[in-house]
Length: 115
Image (cartoon, rainbow, N blue to C red; front, side):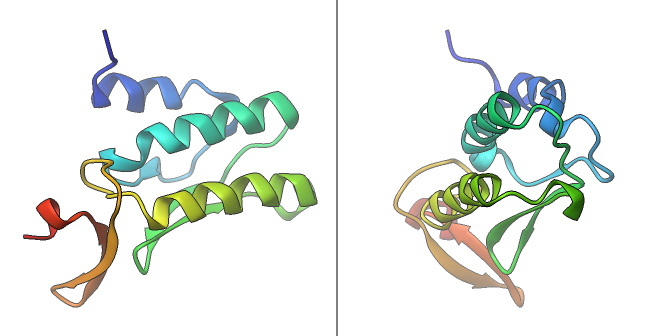
């Protein structure tokens, strides 16, 4: 049985990487699965790193963390998740998805959610 999006959102908060977010997870449910994979990978490889903020900006995924933790492999993990997000609907998680402008804001949406 798969986890509900609400339960997954709560589980993400228990991962060390997401445990100290200043503003919570500022993304819609469609990206929770890829954030779960990112959080697990970062926690395994860089257990001391904590994200400051996870949000959507210009229809793309943005993950920020203190510069003291800068490491090329960490950047690679975050860029890979952001690259996946560009093709994943932020509403429902479907692929393919495209950048869509609605009400002057950019969203990454599948054809069904863009309607």
